[in-house]
Length: 69
Image 1 (cartoon, rainbow, N blue to C red):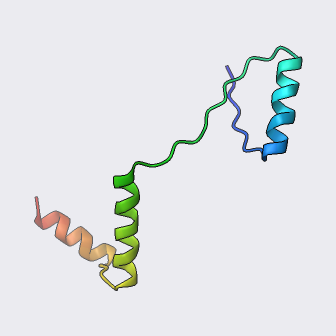
Image 2: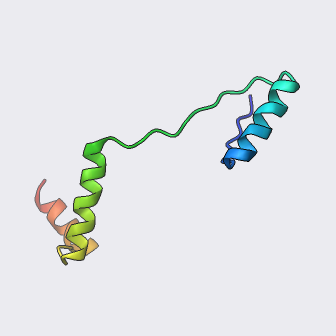
């Protein structure tokens, strides 16, 4: 079974749905899910950390990771 992902505008979505229904083509409409609040909060904190200069290099991260083992 082939799967296709479409990201139509609202008007395009109406046309596509009408076309599929008219031609008896089975389809599944999935709405995008919102990320959980804790994920959004983590992203926001990370962005704030970057703006405040609280960052480390990849090499420093690897060094810390290896010393934690």
